[in-house]
Image (cartoon, rainbow, N blue to C red):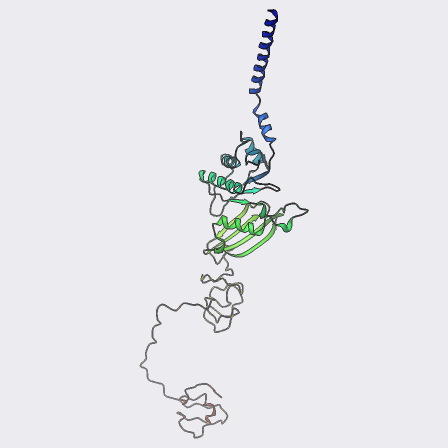
Length: 370
């Protein structure tokens, strides 16, 4: 009997202990669970970059394993985001965009003040499938639209880095010129086949590597500086006066007549055009009948394709004034004779050169045809 009671007490004690253990387990700090989730192997990461920069790591299923702020602003945003572990990366990206907006990091874009958003597949990363990155881009773009933001999203993939600058098998630190061009055109909303580039070059600006791009499209001049490391836009300028890309009030290399024919032969079209800003003018505004260096004969259009006038010129006015009476003049040719008035005879007249100073020479030429 006593033995049975002892067994019952032991059973109750074990059950109580299990209950207590279960209660302690239910009160585990969520951060410990997060740590367990973080231990899942990641296969890659994508950086979300605008001003806050945040690295989003994910596993083979595309689920987020960790977030890392890459700068002070990025760390501030990450600290405000809870319960992201195990969520799809596309969902987390959209949430981050909304948090960045709530923190006031987006600027109010204007025609000349742009702020693009970059999604960058980080070095040595793999992706779960071919749709993973496009889905991230779509998710971020949808989040921006829901916030009534006009920021342009650009994806930088593993193939967008310039191998010419790669060292010891490491990824190049610079994007390609082609990628910078794509970023510029996408920001301007211009198709590649509609743009005419005047300048594409790599440069250092205060030690910062940039790509400088200048192009024309639809009569508008664009000038952008793109950060060669991040793909972010540093400068965005447009000029709707196609003749003055520098907006400095001076005539540039384009036609002054706005005929959409870009001239590359000299600095400002032909030398004697009516809008010539070069001090080497041969003559004034009027036609000077002299040859200019672009092989046009003094045309102000500089393209040899002047349209025909829409209205025929008015006929010359008629006159009723009497013809002047011919006056004998001295003949300065070889025979040193005095020419007669009508030159109708061969008396005392050497007609070999048709007498350039005749008044009514029979050959109707007033010049020396000798």
